[in-house]
Image (cartoon, rainbow, N blue to C red; front, side):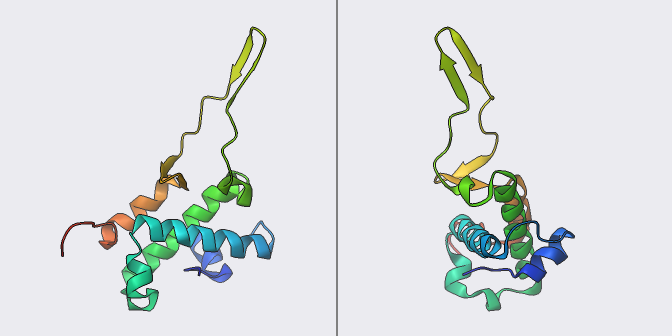
Length: 128
């Protein structure tokens, strides 16, 4: 289940879709799964429609940021196994410097995602 539509994506990113519709649907669903994981499934349990307007907008922005992040890293392929950033042939060695993105439970997370979600209270993991 995705928390955004193509129209939401175009509104929040202020750009039109650059990928196939089917890949957008897949990435939107996976990006929403990443948000669910970060929020410890609070949105899934509570229901997206129960969020207040600010929370809903911030979640949509976070999903858009995650889609852009995945798209920049190769789309659906970014969710697969990591490719090594170094190669060695004999005495020659080359390294790309590694992946600078954050991960949680091996999920690639866009740098902006936590910034969008932080003020919503959805990342809080203590007792309420």
